[in-house]
Image (tube, rainbow, N blue to C red; front, side, top):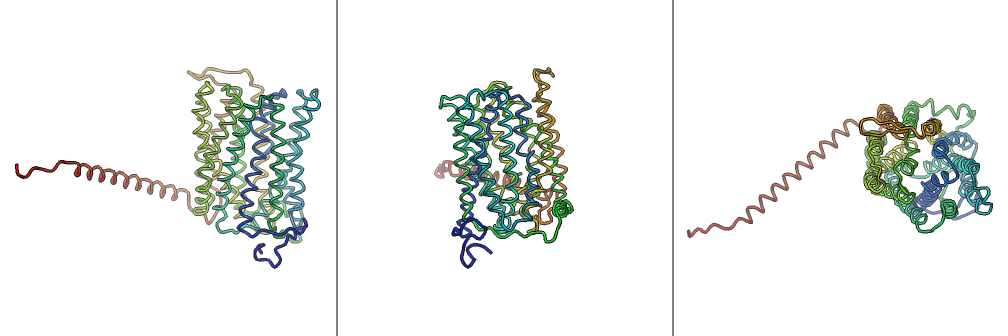
Length: 482
């Protein structure tokens, strides 16, 4: 029962007795909180963090480990799924762990300021360990929060709402990264100092995000009755629809994590861009997601999540091709990559909306947290191993290059080629996802092509008609007396 419909509208989850917001106001708060949480995550994991790692003496291996953490810690979602089945309310556990997660990078980033001798190559592992904890806590909290939203938000119009939320989150991504870029450029500080300040700012924003959820109702957990931990864990893998999604997610993370973790390092190290240029490139790319997120959400709501995943996955290899063709001149490369990155970010948002929409809509109320966790946890392990392995390969190939025709190929190029080919292979897996309510992606593609062809044809006829009318009206009248 929604808070607006309950008798007292009070918070019964165990955190105080705060008055709860009605659904409409709660949805607004969820969007605002999503923006604040996004700002936190983008600041602490941006290219500034990669440059900070390099300043500590980190190599491609360290960057690979750093970028593997978001997916590598997805196994924590399975633990959260098991824990959720023992809880009546998820919010107290989620809130407490999230507070720790949003603040733990601050002492690690501040330590070298007070103890400069600590800032050396060995500190990179302390920084990575802190990020392991950060992402581990984030992934543990993810199914708790997602299952809470799945139980609370109305099923009808959910993808549409998720698209609107993603639109504002992507505007936030753009603003956050632009802020990072401008601060790094104009502060006059070293990356060690500027990144520390950014971490403090991100922590404050992240805590405010959490506090907004204190006034959003949480329905009780619908637990799997009298089920052992093994039954709770294996139940999603016995569901054919979820099994098909897990296979796709594993293949997609394998394909993506061959190349994606090393894009910022490639731009900094190989192309020679400054940190400001890289941050601004990612900032501009997020505009592509902001402009298309609401439309993609409506598309998923109307046609289903599977067609959206199929079309976005089909176009994802293009970004790897664009990176391979990027010129070595930093300024030219920035102008060349910016529109491609905007398109690629829009595709990423489509995949995010499709994946989260599938998990929220297809997971049953009973044992929902475990269904959501299983949907991404196995894929995360695959992505983590892939990223670390490719980081090690990249480090071992440092200094190697070969000329193939007019192209000079190095380790980055080999990874991008491999990632592009594997992304193409992922299309076969996404086409096998079972979503009975979704439209057939092949028939939908033909329908879209016909509609676009019809629009083009009608547009051309209108132009011809307008030109003919103008020609007739512009013709001077005939002198009949002559």
